[in-house]
Length: 393
View 1: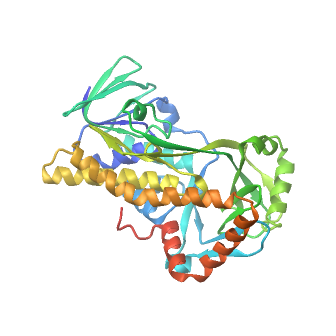
View 2: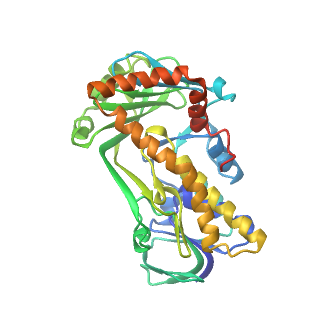
View 3: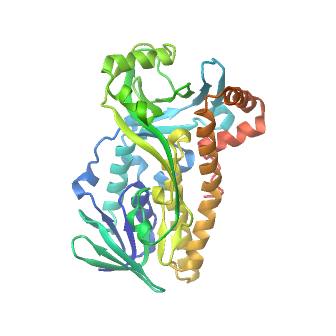
């Protein structure tokens, strides 16, 4: 039970990190509390992810993208942002990004299935159906005690066990947690109007509604509302909800029909003050848990796993201890430099666009107009949405 690297958590970040290290010859193990049957065929959870060009590139490199059914992948070519009751929109086009599309859409459970299949054909060992109950580290290695009674030692332990990570707490890493007191409700609907390739973010008064294009006249809906009002939506009949959405987007997609159950997720922002400790590193939501409004959570997790894997590979080439503080701190600095401004900026955006005081309403509308008129600012925002420039990765 001795390994070079032990990964806690078999979500997309953990699996991607393991796959990225496959060509290093390092002996790697993944510990996951779910049974392997669940990893091989994950349940649909309502979440459809917007994939940036950088994430698309990483998933291709890791032999994951081609494992997803092409018919389950849609393209986002345009994006619009609306505020309150106004018809004015902040518009982003793929032509401004110089690409065929702004990004891609596909389902979380399909990405996870593809990631599992890609890792399974390699030499990474998996221990499933068990949890980490204790963790200790010293200058040379880390030790994990598992709920099945086994003990694992590794030169480096990497945690990818969710934004509510128990091992992060065991390692005494301070973490900022922001309860938005809002709930995200997601589902899919069919529509009868013309096929769309435009993502729409509606900052309506009282709630936020995202309409994301899928294939075959389907769309993903993301409703964000105060948690104490979420039950009002969850209790709606399918017909009532479809009619409500039709009205809120002014019949843009024609007649609509609910085709999945409703899934609800309380919103909590998480940011670890350090992404490492002695012989221990954080990736994915364990490092940074984002509000979904800017669709950066999945992409940021994949990017972080890729960054840490790159630092380890560089250390191996240079003959440096890849689990040392110097290597892990380099990863921390790079990932923090990218994630910190986005995390704070997203939280500020959410705070402003859920504030309905008269001054805030005025500022909300003004910022949308400014976003259209200031071309350099718009270019920066477009690049953040698409991540076509991967120099910082």
